[in-house]
Image 1 (cartoon, rainbow, N blue to C red):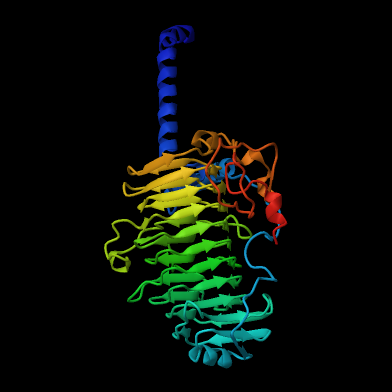
Image 2 (cartoon, rainbow, N blue to C red):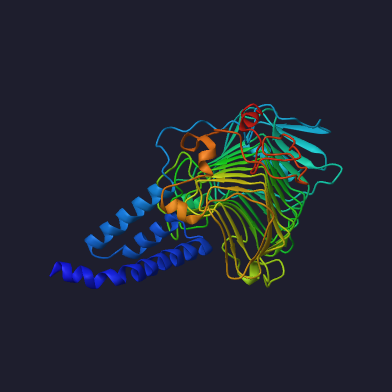
Length: 477
């Protein structure tokens, strides 16, 4: 009987194999075109099983664990301290025109309230605790005489904020530098921002600060006007624990403003523990234009690991904006002419770079490691992708326009087989050893003349990604 059955099946083997191959190919094409990596599919399937009968929940959890292991699979050892990005102890400082020394919280608030153009408000070493209302910054500086609040040396002045917002800046030409600011709220929803920059606070500068334990360390948005032309440079922006809040968690949250430069910052461990559990290292949205994220190190999950939820590295467009909060009150596009360049983005449970209704974007020479790759969404999105090194796929959804000018990425199919050809270029991604295992792949002659992540000049035939030689980064500070 079995032999007769085999004889009957034999003519069907070829067609069945062909159907199977077509089905596998179609599935692979769909997963690649949609950017559905194992980490995303696993989380989705576990979410579908949540709240069902225990066996279904168990299967969902096991499938997610398997897919996550295939996709991510990094070791569980202690990762090295990041020394190549963020604040440093010995920053360069400009000479003061008029120095106002302060040594108490009350003196600092008084000096800010009475500040004149050109003042440098210098805090004496120590710890300053603030509770109650935010610190209002309303006195304008000038282009030739900005007002500065600073510590003479980083790591000597500590500001503790048990308040919803720390500095509420609504006047132009202010500089904050060398400060260590920590949110001290037992209820994480009560520590929203270290800096809230609004309205007429154009030409705001924050540099060489360390900001710890806020939902959105920098919140930038309109309030009757737009605070354009700001700089957030060389800051360390971190959280020491999961943010126990359903409020937005985005380390640099920029809505509506234009022509900001976000450069050289370390952004680490921004995990939203409640609500939709979706968080971002930084985004610019709300119909602004000309915003630039350059040379940042974004580590979605570095000391805080294996938490549920979605972490996105950097985004032009974020999750979208309600029309009333948009610069044009319409948000036909979320961002225009935005730039993401020479950023290192790693250890993200979701996309490393996400473009949402972001027109005329430039995404150039970024390195994405252990992320779900780069995603362009919606027909309003258009982008030039140039020289990126992506440990994951580059995907387009909803008729976005991608101009691929030469990038290295990983096909989704390899990830489902546990293979990571881009990740394997490095010595040990799991322990954040980003030295090249062998000579790195180089582009053909490129017109890129900007410095890389490590402040090194790029040769005529540059390496794909953010840096030529990561050892140069390690010796930078």
